[in-house]
Structure formats: C-alpha cells, structure tokens
Image 1: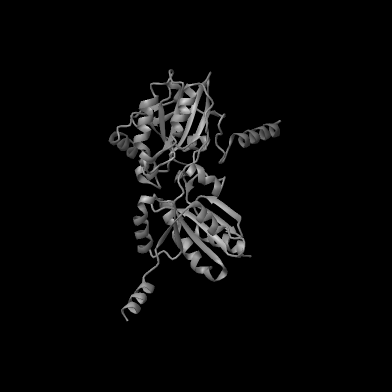
Image 2: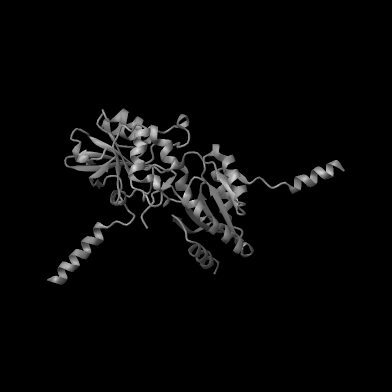
Length: 200
Length: 155
C-alpha cells in the first residue's frame, strides 16, 4: 500500500512539474496571489467584473521592457474599461539585477505612473507555470466559468524600438478579437527580449 | 607617391568593426554546404548583461580554435539606431571575432526561420556545419562548457 502511495505521489510530481513547457494557447492558466507595489496581495479572482486579463511578464532593468512601459500603460487605459485590464508581473531574481527588487518596482511604478497592478513573483513559481522566458512576455487569459483560458501568448507588437514604425499590434488585435467573440489570430508570436533571470 | 601613401594608409585602416546584415545575408554566410568550417554563432546585444558576461568565452574559443576550421560569429541584436554604440563597444573591448548587426525587421517573422525552438530571449547560441544545425541553446554558457561543446563537434 505504501509503495502504491509512493508511486502515485511520484506520478503526481512528474505530471505536475513542467520544467520548461509552460502553457500553450487553450490551456487553463493558474491564478496567483502576489504582492502588488501598493503593498497588498492581489489575485485575478479579486476582479469579478473583468472578462479576462492581459498578463505581462516584465521587469525594471530590461531595455525592451523599458521601451514598452508606456505602451503597457496605454493598453491598460484602453482595455481595462472594456473588460481586459493589464496585470504586470516581475519574476526576475533580484540578486542578479538589484534594480529588479520590490523597492525598484515600487519606484518604477511611481515614476511611470503605472495604471495597473505590478506584482512581485518572488518565488518565480508563476513565471515557471506560465512558461514565460523573456521580458516582456504577454499571456492573454479569458474567463470561462471558473477557469482562465490562455488565448494569446507572445509579443505586444512587432517593433520594440520604434513605436511609430509598429505595423502589427498583436495584443490589441488579440483582445479586439476576444471582445468581438472571434478566434484570435495570430494567437502566438515571438520577439527578442531579455531572458527571465532564474534563481541559481 | 601621394597615391601610394594614401593607398598604404587605407590598408592600415581597420576594417569596418561591425557589418550590418539582412537575414538572407546571415543565412548565406552560415549555411555553406561546401566547406568544413564549424560556425559557432552567438546571438547577443550590448544591453544584455549575461551576453556580455559570456563574450570572453567566445573570444577565447575563437582564438583557441582558429586553426581548426572554427569560425565564431557574434550576431548582435542591438537596435539598428545603436550601431555606433555597438561599434564603439567592439573597438573598446578589442573584440576579435567577427561581429554582425542583424537587421531583419519583425522578429516574429525571422526568429522561427533561424530556429523554431527559440523563443527570442538572448543569449542564444547555434552551431552549424555544412548547412546543418548541430546544436541550439537559448541561455548562457560557462567557459568550460562552451569549450567542451566545440571539442565534441570537432571530433
């Protein structure tokens, strides 16, 4: 009997541990409870009225993240009222980049007047479950009964360097599709970015 | 005489430290079926701290294996507008490996053409020989690790 329990436990650990797979479009995403820059802990479930969320893995130090700060703010201003607010998460190991620590997040959120929650994934568990690898890395999730379904994974748009030269606004396009009850296309894109700094 | 001196000066001038390349130019360069050169291609940028940290390992490898048909190519993904900053970096750090600046437009369209498994985070490293991809990694290297990887691909 003991052996059976041991086997079952081993199997459970095996199936629940996804080393670098993360979510694919269509998967059920986990909720979380993480510390916001305001000092309180936040879960997606706290927001009862949202239809879904634009979850953005980002950080303070990465030049690509910095390039996108205003655009992330604009996304929230445009889509929060329509039912898709932005929730930003920093999962970087602050030992490797001091400015990515919680104090750095509070400072940045103030400086840039972030209109969205900016959460600290100190254990990196959420970045690992989602499969985020770079910053910024976006996951759009849609509420379906009690679940959060992943509808889009990827880049914010097609030009990090020059907002004036952007041709494809991938995240806006995805949310617009969801709001119009249309399939999201493209639902997966790639971008260059800083790697998420995992704890050693 | 003047012409001769000018010619001499021209020869003494260092070559352009960084060559800007399109995706096609980059691919033609590493996918050469007719020679035995092992291409060690490292994708990096001056703004990427872990990339800069591992650059010396690629420099050491380029020097160590240069007589063994190994070519280390440092492909920078700096913003095109930062080319001068990149060139300054290359000159100041006396980077000996060839440095290219990839100007390929929308990353969502070209990352998969280079490597479908690559999410886009840097550093990333690919080894090619005769147009064949021998190795891919999204992530950093330790010096001994890079050295033994090249050794195994040479044997």
